[in-house]
Length: 331
Image (tube, rainbow, N blue to C red; front, side, top):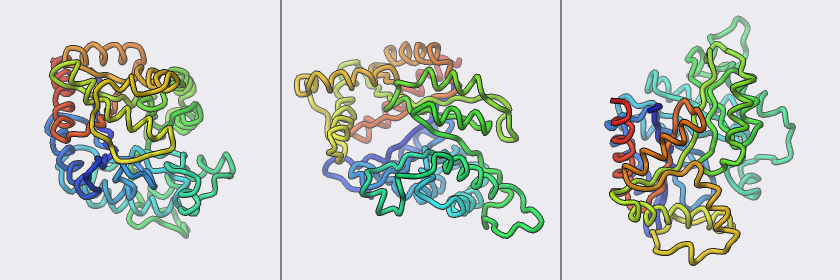
């Protein structure tokens, strides 16, 4: 089995709040660290009532401070929302506090709607080349100080924090390949271009000081339980959340429901069906087969697992079953 990691969207569930969500995230991080997951990533989203990780660097500090060895990072920071120097200082600070454990995944989407993007002082009409320039500027701040360098990231200089490029289209694949960086594809919510993106990335990869060979991590949804039926019932929370987002009505993560299919339109059924290529739902036996098939089909070097489950204990149990499957395959 390839390495497994965790993508935590820090879900705020119906009837709960951000404080409880962040407490749950730390508990889940400690749990998955013991289970042997490789890394733990949180994502930047703004004006999303169901996601508590808007201040991504702060949440990473919260997670890293409460764990011991697991790598902690962003999946991702939406770089166009920020000055590269500020991100270099934030992650330089994190790396100084938790040496050798911090990672920086970068995306170029706003992570929000157009009105919130404006509130973030972000223009959505920009130069297509600005994101690559920002990535390279950010990389430069992590290099050792150069003679005559006028702007430095303190902390940050000389720390060589690992940078990943995130994407859900071919653009990110091309950029990651050109810069010689590891690539994380968001197949858990946008799998349509997954195989083409992987092919482009591997074919065009240029070795760099950070990465000698291409490395692909794919996002997948996993909802594991004692039975297939229970797993699909638990999965209905994430599916409802996805539908609410596509309808322009984002909200807290709802509790599971019975017979969700009977409550949605034919078009919505097709949309949810498209997500199944990167979704594993069921008992341990079912999950094992679906993980094996997905890894064989994609050639992924690593999977990062998102499990949007309403009940926190059931969510922890899902990661436990997933880890048991991976450990069984590795032995």
